[in-house]
Length: 439
Ligand code: SAH
Ligand code: F3S
Image 1 (cartoon, rainbow, N blue to C red):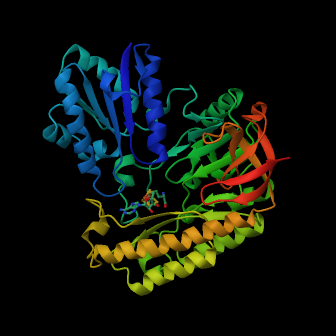
Image 2: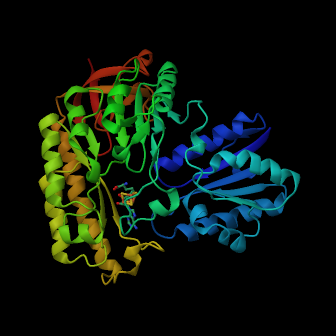
Image 3: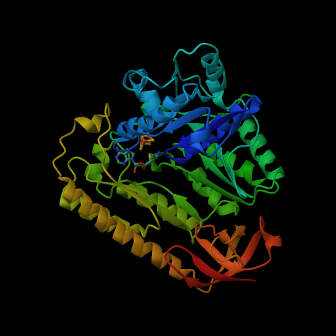
């Protein structure tokens, strides 16, 4: 068995892709996975290019791996993911010790490419976009305890002016609904209790059904909720643009769908949203939230924010802060704008200096942290449904699990309930976890 070491950077989609790479390699019966890069015969780097210094980071890593290859010239180095798709052959030019370059949509071809390299050492590249081919494999993937991620669609057609994703992942394409349902039923039979549906814009899902019709996202959610054993459904990421009323309706009648939604707004200024080509206004976003609260009064919303987008004035930034307070966002991700080569925003004049950008990020994150804490404090005394994941790493007497709104809860209980849902009363709130009592 040849040992393979996979290093993954970036989003949950990349994590998912890496688990598929492992699966495709293991399926051949010739490769097994290792966590020790020094002992590996094959080194795989799954790259990300969403923000800063992505390329630099790749070449630094390849520099480190060059030393391993100098020690053992038979080591095969493969570079995949978004930087690979974007840079293509340029990577060979800068790093002569790389053997294989494969794209986000051609990872299933990796085993064949590796065996070709083993026969005649000549470098190989495949960054084509063969639609959905990579999903033609039905073994369950990426299980973390009792939660599993399931990719339902790929790519993005929105072309927000700052974003590289449409260029690295290709156009939106949805997996057939039956494949997804089959995969999730399989996961349920293997003890999975919670699924996280993945895609760049999951709410744009429109997958073919077995009888030639189209299944939309709202229908897919309802179908998944009928699978026995799956008791919690999440999804990430969705976009305000196609967050239609039929999806909001699902919150009314599908309790398995969590009362927590990640819906990135990016900015609270309509001027900036327009420059970003987000195709919605803050008013439209607010309207969606209002309807969601009507459908599910206890829903919590999280978001992504970009600060320092070209043209963002102090006033625009203040509007974002006001919006954060108005919507009362829970824990969110925030980033300093990073110019991505080839995107329309990279041509816009960026006059804000880095110090100012860092200050804005600091202010924004402070507000979010305060709100996150206040959402947690609201949970004091409440009874939460917790998916018990295992024994706490810090205290072997305690168990830990996750609430619907992504909080880790520690509590005393028997290990027999690991992998099950438990009712836990929250009696202490810390920054990174909650303490509770099992009921
Ligand atoms: N489909 C999602 C976004 C996926 S990208 C949506 O519609 O919002 C994940 C996050 O990375 C984005 O929400 C954005 O906040 C951030 N991001 C993307 N490109 C960026 C850039 N050039 N600079 C800074 N942050 C960026
Ligand atoms: Fe990127 Fe906008 Fe699509 S942020 S992933 S282009 S919705």
